[in-house]
Structure formats: C-alpha cells, structure tokens
Length: 309
Image (cartoon, rainbow, N blue to C red; front, side):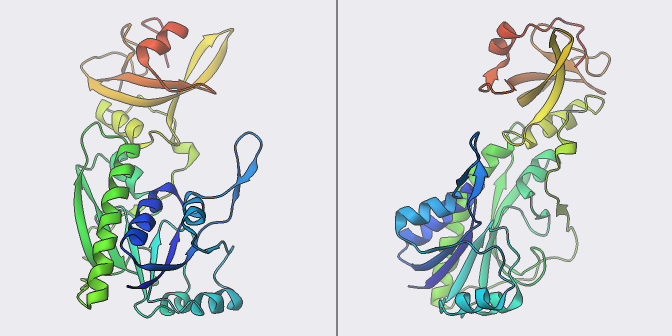
C-alpha cells in the first residue's frame, strides 16, 4: 500500500479521499483550506475534506501557503509515496511537488487540454459541450498542463446542470484515481503529454457574468442557466410589487418554440422570449426561499404575459 498525502478542499474531493481510504492506502495527512466564515452567524466552518478526515482519524493540516520553508519541510517529513490533489486551492511549489517519491497526481474535471483552470465543469456546460471527462494527470509547474495518465469520458446531456455533472464527475473521478494508484503501486502507471492544440481556460465564475441576457439565442441562455445551477445561480430581475425589483435565481429551463421582444414573458407558463427562440423557466428561487417549480413560484408571485424581465 502507498503512503498518500491527500490535498483537497470541497465536497467534490471527498469521494476520492474516501476511495483511497477504502482501497487500504495509508493517508498520512490531509491538506485542506482553513475553516472559513459561513452561514448567517459567520462561524468558522471546516471544509468538506476537513470534516471527512476528522471522522476518518486522518491528521489535517490547513496552511495558508506552502511557500514558506517550514511548511515545505513539514510536508517533506511525511515521507509520502505520492500526493493526490483534488481541487485543493493552493499552488504547489516545485519543492513540494518533488517531495513525494512518485510526485503528485491530480484529478481534474475536464477532457484536458480543454478547460484548464478553476471552473471546468461550469464552463463546459455554459459552452454547450456535449462531453467532458474525468482526468488523472501527473502534476507539473503549469496550470493543469501535466501529462495525462488516465481519462474517462462523460457525456453532458442537453439539459444536465453543472451540479449534476459535478456529482457524476466526482464519483467517476474517485474510481479513476483509485485505479491510478493501483497502477502506480505496480509500477505500471504510464502518462502521455497533453496535445498542444485545443487548450482553453476555465476562468473562475465572476458575479458580473451571472445575470441572464435574454438577447442571446435561446440555446445560449439555457446553457448559461444550467451551467450556473445550483451555484452561484443565474438570475433575472422582476418587479414583484411596490415598484421594487427583486432578483430571482433561475435553476432550470428548457428551450421551447416562441418569439417576441427579448426578455418578454410570452404565456402563463413562464416562457420568455430570447434573441432567437424562447426558454421556459422551470425552477426558480426567491431570496431566502427554497427552490421551487415554476407553477408553485407563480402561485406566490404571479407574472402576467407581456411582463419584461
């Protein structure tokens, strides 16, 4: 069995850590982001990997940086065979990458070299990609540029949300990493350099790009909505009474037939005209409320045909 340092933070990384533990490898430490203020009380909350590691009895480390000499030495002192990195959130300096006997393996949620960077799942859905992949690669100093060890294609359905794809890739990626570690232990893990062509960058989602632009074609609007669902959520503004405009998150939609001025509600089913075609809004969420189907939303917030959103 291998001595593994696991480095990850969000819920996406937990199935991989769980799979490594179940496979019998010795996880000598889990590195994760420090607890952050969360919730209404802004109490410090441990990351998902931190909580799992606590339950599993794995020592947890939460350095702010790995650039300091003492942090590097503490990492080297673990005498790990391999570092497994899944959505960790910190850059690993070369001395850290070089410390484990077999270096570092990273699980990335895209068919590299497409969608290198912070938000590969959301960007793939927003772009309307029909497929992506879970990929295990050897780590180097570049941003998701290391050679590919294993890759498992995943289809993206035309109505699949980023949240659904996230969960699928999280589970499939976990199995893929366990396979990679088995091959590594046997001395049989091979890698192939990434193709030079086709590289794209998956920039972190900015709040300024989450508003729905109904002047775009319906398919593009639909991809935007599902690519940001459930978080951070695409949104529109709607006059809900008293002259005030309320921001409403849209979590699901469908492309339908329809025409009219962009942003106009066309019927009592919340069909909204786009620059080309129309989308029907299927699931919405008001501030502080739970997500609800359009029919339930309309009972509490009637929207007449002809309304501009």
